[in-house]
Length: 130
Image (cartoon, rainbow, N blue to C red; front, side, top):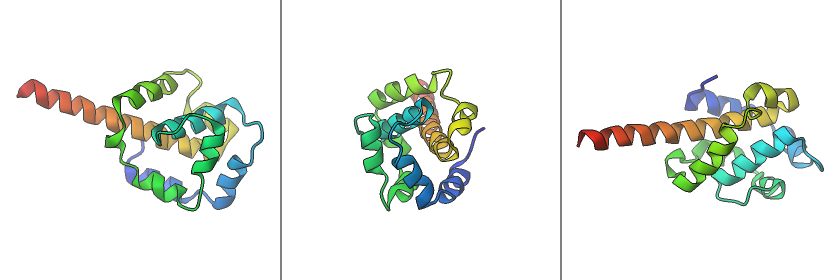
């Protein structure tokens, strides 16, 4: 499922503080949630740990996701995120079964990655023409 930024922001806005705190309070999160948490950390230039993910969740978390500049993702981070994207278990269907909240964050990760990837592709097309 491809979302545009407006649709994604709408999905993010539907997440409540309780939804986020439920994720944050997990003592032993399922693998699907761990994967999403790690990817969110990487996109925020943090070590990919669940602890660091919980530190990202504050009163500005959703606003920060909505304002995130996908074009600022480094090539190194793109390579790291690609490992998640290419994982056969890193799918919306799989993550939705575990957590609706994590599935929205998964969509944000995927959107950010795909947005930057498309920008890189269009940039390389422009360089070919020049």
